[in-house]
Length: 209
Image (cartoon, rainbow, N blue to C red; front, side, top):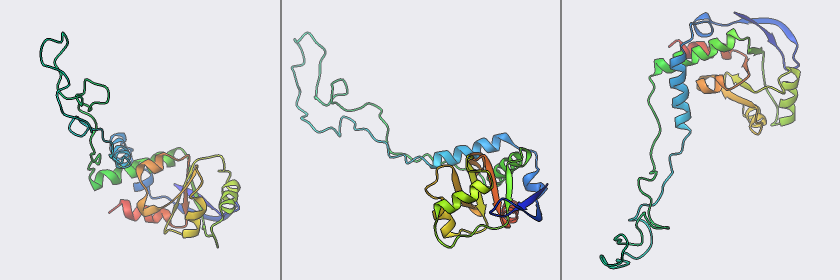
């Protein structure tokens, strides 16, 4: 598959790039996509949820009433889960939600996601993206030139440019990521995938290890 290369003004440069068929043209595997997206989303969870059990509640441990003769159920500490302000039974505890996904499975998932993007013509090629200083408006003007200002985009760069990253950091619908570190979730979560420079070659070398 070949893509025409555009410049930051949205004009064709006369150049084109060829996307590797073993990365952008494989038979997609939906199950490995689900596994890798699940791994990514689980990793975003802090897992710091915690509720107090009866042994952690501040309060007296004295027996609040006699055992028999009250006509009501027996009760010990005021910290019992049966009383308001008491401890929680089987409440959440801090835990780690990370799950393991093999490297080959993760690579296949990213290849499958990239293949879907290629099939749906949601990939653009940009010759270069550099900025002299962090300017959000300048970044937005590039997106407008590419007619992507109303789309959710993911820009993959061969190596991180601090000014480009800072310019897009506060934008909700525009994300910049180094090609080596892109995840399956990020690929699927955008409307348009922008490949800057030789980002497609970086992806091919990474995913064909």
